[in-house]
Length: 173
Image (tube, rainbow, N blue to C red):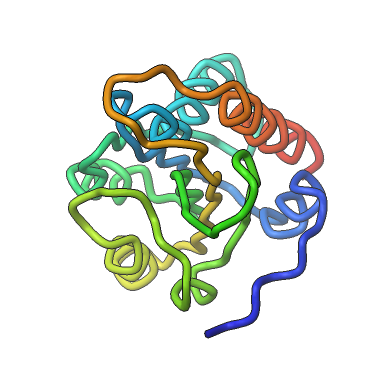
């Protein structure tokens, strides 16, 4: 099992890893039917509003992948991002609301993304090989994935923190 990446403030780490970015795709993954599984979608929706107002570089575009993010691979490829950030619920057996930032090569070994059709590793591998993008994954530990319930306050708060950290990082690069 690979060692867990050292935790740094999210904004600082994002600023470092996005240095030199020209085009950034945000791919929100999740289901609004399964309580905290909506976390990735909340982040993508928040950033969708932000990028529409943003006129300067780097260009940012949000994609709402829901439970079938593989359906957007063509649109993302056409956008030609040099960086892609996938945001999803991730089970790392930590306290609900915990945020983990991984690079593509840090996937595997005890990291389990929520219940979607295509394994995260396959999607990431596609983006790296077909587009040549640097891929990051931001995972948020869910409190619950119960069907038909509203997202927990702790996961809503974590999604807001991720959105704000991405916005702040973009202002520094």
